Length: 557
Image (cartoon, rainbow, N blue to C red):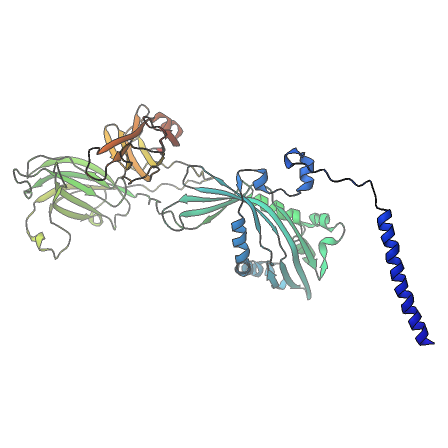
């Protein structure tokens, strides 16, 4: 009987399946809705804003704003590097948090507080776009927009008053747009001195928080109730609640780093930072006696070159006295002193030549360590060929040089409190600048679209008050970069002066066209004095498309 019942059950099941398939087929064929219409396909440019937002709920920045660039390559690079970055960042977090845990653990009577698990998860942050600014300054500004929907596992175990609690952070979301400034740019690796970071908008922060294994943030009303306990410090519970308010995290981060507030990270010291002078050395070149004859048809045409350290004002030169071996100059010079204990004044006597290099007659070095401040010291120096004591040429007489030295130490300035630092602040003129005068600093950065008929090996010639200065020549370059600085120490502001800037191409070999003018610009320096600092690109006159970028500063005394 049991066997017959089993067989009949299987047969009924088979008939039931077959009958159901047949009925379903007829229902599908004869009851298909006839009011279904094909969707209307329209181009994207014909859709309104609402339709686009429904179609693309999260439009990338590089679509909405053409100033932002796609950085898929950076996201791919970050994804490959993320497992290693995760471990490195977690180690930094542990090392950074340890002193704070030790400090506040004792303050709030915590027996222990440690990370039982710390990982940022397997999902790296994503850069949805990066914007780069061109400021023509010695800086680089980028604005990355970052989204991170991560799966971190941060488990902190806290033990206090004999009780043990665990707090776990999961499902972290951070959306932020930051501004990163690398400045100033220098010619030393990594090519910038500081990293300055600020947030352009209030960041979006969202996360899940589990206490003792349960989702604490899922308790109704607790998310808003946390705010009530922010200023309460009466119990361990109030301490814990401070850690779980997402709005408070946003507010505190915004207070610290929302633009114009910044986070400044020093990377290297600025190699161009000038040490503050501590005194002024007054040098009077009096005369020379019995100089060695250098000219074949006459005597010598001597002049003296003075060098004290490095910098634009570290070198001075006397006038040339023609056809004499016993010249008298009686010329005075002022030179800045950075360290009188280690610096030395170098004196070189040359024979001036109209063609070719100038011949060195002799030299001598005077250490500043033995000069008493405020007293004038007269020295008569025997000239030598070099400072090598083993050089046999030093035994031959080369003449004598008489100078007078007076060292004046500067008074120590009082400390001036600095409330706010201006990134583009103009420096003061160096000590010793005439009262009412100042220092004119001209920096030739580069040029664009230069074009010569016969050659394009450009250099710049500056002409100011009859004085001419030149940059180096760059071979075969229509967009040269010089980044050379020239300084003029002036007794009065150049409000009625003009600076002549000429771009010239120099032939590198022997030919007919040795020089070729590529354009020029006449700059009114009154604007520099009034504005203190100008960084502009000037269109070159007598040039089709040539432009030159010049930065100028007036540092008043």
